[in-house]
Image (cartoon, rainbow, N blue to C red; front, side, top):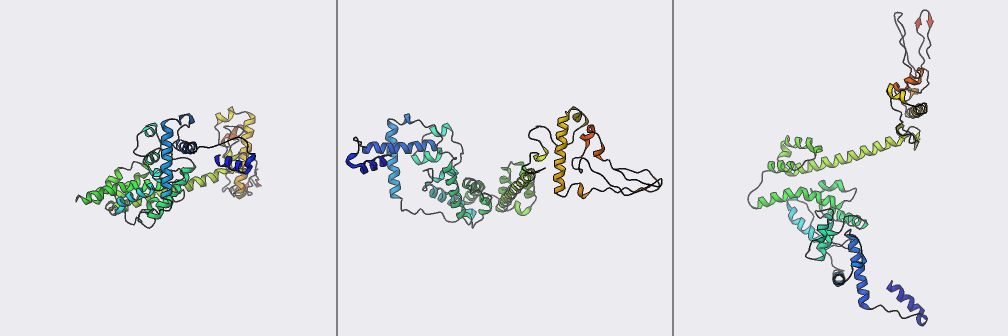
Length: 394
């Protein structure tokens, strides 16, 4: 705004009306207020301009000056990245280097990228009101993990982290997040696994190594998801996995990744099947239902249910069934593929006829299997001998 006003008055020259000036301190306070407002919104707090008074103005101006100073001094600085994690036994050193590296990187939220993989996800009032040693720590703890800035910073963290673990055993634990580029999920997943490994390394340094079997059993004891019960039993019965902590971890992570991928694929297939309606894509009778008549479907009804239906609802059900059967024919499952019934009798016995649903009255409609042919179709039987006559049944 200030730049636009100044530029306009410069162009107007002597013809500019009034005497407008922008004092240096006022400009600095206005800029600091803008940064303060962005931080309030980033923390998910209600923004009230009336709160920007007194000591808060002084603090905001000081913080703005420090941020400007840091930007100017680190503009050309190249931050050293951690070495690639090629051995999970070096996790503790890697983790400390990773935290230091990301603390020096500021993302779209104008906050150190360490905030993306902090322990807590939601910012409570207690977290917001707590005292912090410095401004960056406050931002790390209080910036919300939502919004467009989070999406950008989360993807950036994933790209940075992936590059450092791609060539090592850690990649098998985080590759499930590759499609979504979920940096927070990837970092916290590998950290969870390595919490156990780090504790074991510490004990090893103290000459108190933990047997591999105990590492595995302790790790499995912390897994409570019932979906992994069978996998836990398999590991406990597999001598190789039971005696190799890293092998156990990789097996479980691969299993979780494959199950997640399979479930997603099944949901996609289910969605496609449901979207294929009786009358084609987008037909009103999608899934054998009539959206204009809730509760009316092409399902089978009991005698009691059918007797309570009005004639209009019965007619609707018949229409839905016809539409479904027409769709079945289009997929090769309709009566066109099985419309002939051969009945042959030996020894002069009575004919056994096919129970044609179409020959029944409305009151028996409820017992019809909706997958059988059209409502009105003819079953042609080959002639059979009975009292010297050929029988043709419709």
